[in-house]
Amino acid sequence: MPLRLIFMGTPDFSVPTLLELISHGHEIAAVYTRAPKPGGRRGLQLQPTPVEEAARKLGVPVLTPKSLKTPEALDEFRAFDADAAVVVAYGMILPQAILDAPKLGCYNLHASLLPRWRGAAPINRAIMEGDAESGVMVMKMDVGLDTGDVAMAERIAIPDNMTAVDLHDRLSRLGADLMVRAMAALARGGLQLKKQSEDGVTYAAKIDKAEARIDWTRPARAVLRHIHGLSPFPGAWAELAECARENPALRAGQRIGRAWCGAGRSAHHRLRRGGDPHRRASARGQGPDAGRGLLTRRAAESRRQIHLTLSYPAKAGYPVHRGFSVEPIGRGVLDRPVKPGDDSRTGN
Image (cartoon, rainbow, N blue to C red):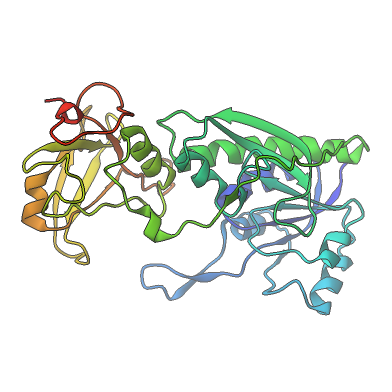
């Protein structure tokens, strides 16, 4: 039996769930999303959210309230007389009165294996911390931060070559299917809920740009996971001091690693002075070794600071800016500490 739903979501991650619910016959009474923000090349044009764009193409009413805590917002929400609300990365806290308004409750799609990584950035944190797996869960919402009872879950492995955008896209599609199954079970009265464990609770705090800095003294696998977890946003960065005091294992002229993007793609390396976005040296390439380059101590000495980013062109019109992968020049990924004078990190 189709349900009458209110959908609440904002970014690209939310769109597949909205489309899947509609394609399976559910009635979307209204879509709630965040208000348009200034964007475009000059930042003067208001940019609607991806969810708003999708909803308007489908002729679904769109609301962008600044708050859900006013009596007017509650009355408007109740007036849709929804069976349930589906919430996917909405970006606004739902007060208890809103949670109580739909007949069957509000259901959230969360991109982690709860109770691990409650909060704002579960995809990034799972990769950055070296988790072996991630997943999506449908939970019935309460007033806590991702503390509601869990209805359904799906898991996927996180290989070392998976970036945040890769995991984002996989979980977005997987979550859409999971929410459709959850709403089907809810409609027939068979959705079972299970309380979250009190063990293993961790919080995925919003990514701070300051923590995007690469620590080259960490094991190579940890560096790789750090970079992949911050790709495409905000992107990892590094400063290589002109002297080796930050990492005594690095000597003048010593190669410390490679950075490149996927084989056969066009790459763009940008090396620039810290705080100077206009002065940069560039290298472009095509083919299996596209964009491959060495970071050297000599380069650090000549520029004092190096910011290196890597990107490749968009696929299917979707703008992608991929962080760079870092591995030792030798074989494999080293997880042991590098001692001063040890050249094995460089393959020498």
